[in-house]
Length: 228
Image (cartoon, rainbow, N blue to C red; front, side, top):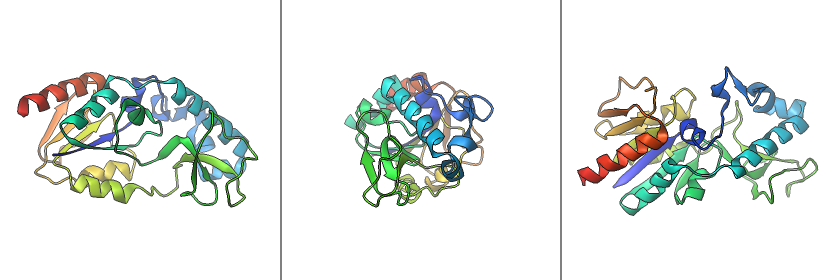
């Protein structure tokens, strides 16, 4: 049975990672349009680079929480495909083997000329002056506002194949990721785990678990075990 899981900021928040939506559009004190757009990179690449270097240090210091771990454990009984809006690597570190990153992953760098040229980062920093094979500056492997989401078609295909769909810790406010639930077949059960349930009234077979990620996934694990 294919279990497709879409995760958002709520699952990483329980590992201590903040997002800009925590505080009126500010992300760690910065306006997102000053640090998370191609225009910001053009204006002040040093600021953007250091901002993501600090975010990367935070990610490397964070640890997967129980919600990440339970999702990894579910691979024993299900064909689990995780689609995440998060740029951290906590799913992988928890043991999940099939993770699609919609918005990139901060532990990699990419060419600022060609997004599919990616590289592992040694340590926690990308330095100004570090170049890709094309001779252009390396930048974080993160999809910024205004950029295309290259993995969205892959994610949509996975949602179409779902036998069971789970949404965790996302408000369904950021597109195109928010539209992925539209690709899940109407007859498929859709579990929504979030303390504040997003607007999903138009969808069929929705089961709301109004809890945070850790408590909600623990409850879902019990539901799935009892249904077998």
